[in-house]
Amino acid sequence: MIRVTDHIALDETELVEEFVRASGPGGQNVNKVATAVQLRFDVRRSPSLPNDVAIRLMRLAGSRLTTDGVLVITAQRFRTQERNRADARERLIALIQEAAVRPTPRRPTRPTLASKKRRVDAKKHRGAIKSRRQGRPEE
Image 1: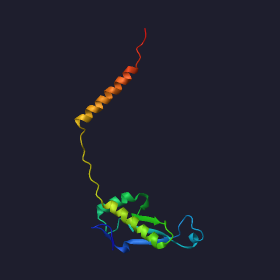
Image 2 (image 1 turned 45 degrees about the horizontal axis):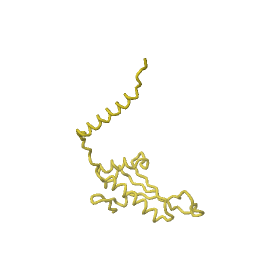
Image 3 (image 1 turned 180 degrees about the vertical axis):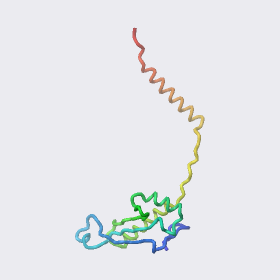
Image 4 (image 1 turned 120 degrees about the horizontal axis):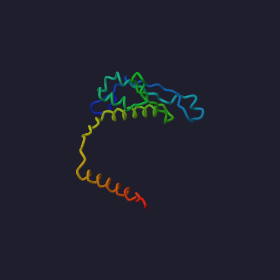
């Protein structure tokens, strides 16, 4: 079990890891060794995630989410499989922790009387400047 928050823990069997060749520089090693990790996590069908967290996670995932609701995280920063595996898992945990935080609802507020007066004064000042620009027609 992977502990994400106090209430959320992921089962190891829900994660699918696939090792692929990393792109970028690396000399001969890059063509021989599959060090990059593609971590797949099925957000829609996960029994570990509450429904509201899953919805927020799908919104946060953006282009990393497939049409089937599978979150794909590719990690290739490091030269070893172990470090890339750990990096991918850390990124998944961070994403789920961010989705687990409920957004505070916005409470609509009304503008204060002072702010209304400042706004009107600014408009009057601006209008006065513009009216002074108007030249009187000469006769």
